Length: 84
Image 1 (cartoon, rainbow, N blue to C red):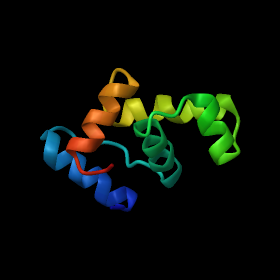
Image 2: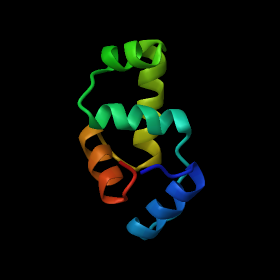
Image 3: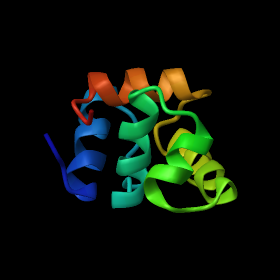
Image 4: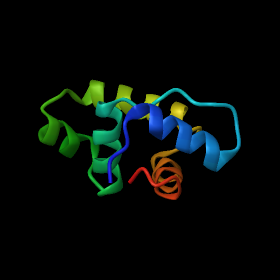
């Protein structure tokens, strides 16, 4: 199931009942799905053909947007919101 970034933001806002979050980009969603599949940063770099630094940057942005403190919490929040 895929959501466009605006729908994902709205869904997260509705589920969490908090202030609207920044929308997840397509790249954020791709990385979030790979994180949920248990891939480490180096595996994500190989899958997407991007640098480790860029993966870390996106994961940091995902954590901020989902108001999560770590990858596991981001996965749980995304799963509960129906994003993954």
